Length: 180
Image (cartoon, rainbow, N blue to C red; front, side, top):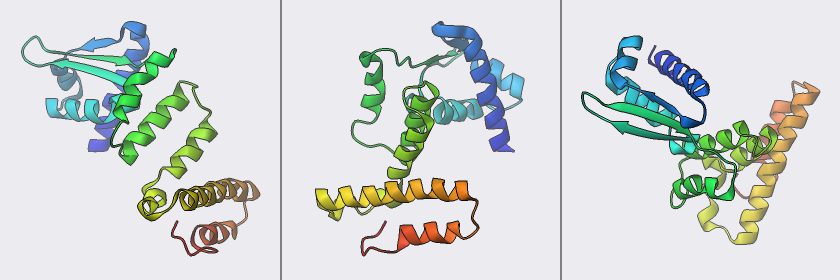
């Protein structure tokens, strides 16, 4: 039920944000809490997980009696607009944040959806976990194998072949002594 409530709050805020336009949305946390019959911490959770900088939003909050929440989309019209996202990815980037950034880039038509999916597949923890012990050439080969394996999954889905899942699993597992 919590996921459903969070999703309802997210969809409501996104609808209001779409109506608000460039200036962004200003709402009171208490009003949202009342509307959704939830505690303010639930609103905070949605803001933190669904409206983060890595998801393409700037959130400003002020607590207290006259407190508010301001949500604005990060525009991606100029090179300067990418700076906040670059700063968010400066030192450490979780898989969830990486997915958020790529999803936002796709939603803003900065990159095509298929490119976003390819990049996301290359940045999975299971792909990157062995990178520390690899040379640059080994890492490049490792990433290329994953790229090709990901692309083969798409080709196999087009064939609708029941055996394709097993073949794809073999691509990820077999043929190399390197872990994928």
